[in-house]
Length: 175
Image 1 (cartoon, rainbow, N blue to C red):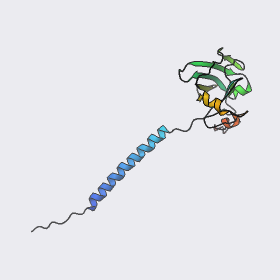
Image 2: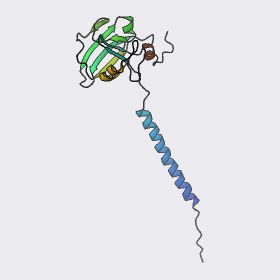
Image 3: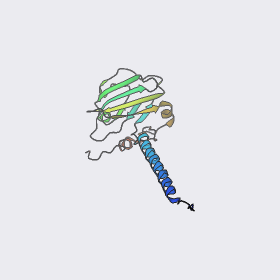
Image 4: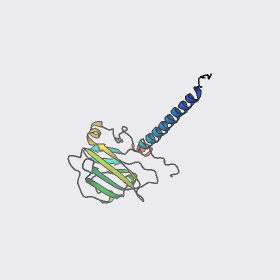
């Protein structure tokens, strides 16, 4: 007579548990990689002021940085609205520029400020001596509605001074 002995279940439970842990580990690793790739380090913000006298922007700079070129596009149509190369004033070199003027630049487009302004202005700044730069898209209606105090610029993170905009950069080692 043969006896039917029950087989132990623990090897199957152990194998099932290891399989579940492996699947969860792989899913967790995949989520970590996907999140890391889709959630990059926050970009630096530019500031803008829109007043009756003109439109000015502030790009963040370190003491050793120089602005080389500024461009403004209509964000909806991607049409170039204005550009300028080689700021000649200390403020312009440090990223504080008035748009739609040739004063203070080695060269600039002769276009006048469009009225009305495009709904969304795409401003890009390229630093001198390379292809490195930054940019931002501004909702003109939101900027005008913000009533930014004197000495500050509108940013998507709230009003900031020029020094606060510059402070976004890690300028260690710059004199």
